[in-house]
Image (cartoon, rainbow, N blue to C red):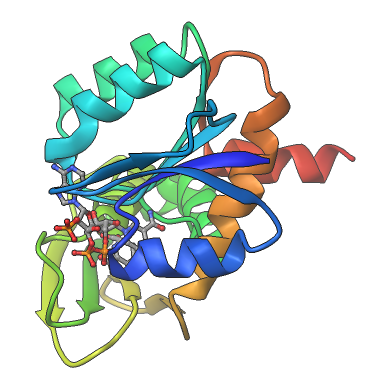
Length: 217
Ligand SMILES: NC(=O)C1=CN([C@@H]2O[C@H](COP(=O)(O)OP(=O)(O)OC[C@H]3O[C@@H](n4cnc5c(N)ncnc54)[C@H](OP(=O)(O)O)[C@@H]3O)[C@@H](O)[C@H]2O)C=CC1
Ligand SMILES: O=C(O)C1=N[C@H](C(=O)O)C[C@H](O)C1
């Protein structure tokens, strides 16, 4: 697959290049510099900053490229832009491309009704270079719960990503924890999403939908 990478010099950009080693990097876009070998990427992968989103969307339209986007901190207008792009090309968006977090998201969505009247708190712990808080994943897990949860954000050392969702009522405590051991896990998920997007029909997909396709096989 020929792929473009937005945020190529970043922590995730470096991991993506390792996970996509069997594929051809034909375009890079960073804050200060853009490079292309002159060919059109089949898929553009964006793990950068929301300030790059309009440019990324324009690149997808110009090149007819599918998009895999992991950048966090997006607002409602940004999601509208991505859904609009999905009318023309496949778009896979997730605030977390690990399999484990997406399974947790499915569990929370399935049982949210039973947890409606429990106290709910989300604790997310990330490396001290992370710019946004709360994490995209914490927001995504809260959305799956369909009710507000108290959020706690810790920024410490080099932790790639740790999320706990804790429920309690008068009689019981129920807690879930997901820990990324290395950020390579997000890059493998992005590769799976890119392989899906390369042949998918235009549309706006979540990584959960990509994983659910596997359950049907
Ligand atoms: N969905 C998921 O599974 C995951 C999502 N993320 C998210 O991915 C994003 C990147 O994380 P991380 O790699 O740690 O961040 P870094 O700060 O290490 O890297 C950011 C990259 O984005 C580039 N960039 C910044 N602004 C622009 C712009 N306006 N146009 C083009 N490129 C730009 C930077 O370029 P330059 O070096 O030139 O400044 C750099 O290459 C974050 O939003 C993070 O939350 C992270 C891990 C997993
Ligand atoms: O910035 C990070 O590093 C991460 N960001 C994502 C988020 O905000 O949820 C996903 C992951 O936890 C790592």
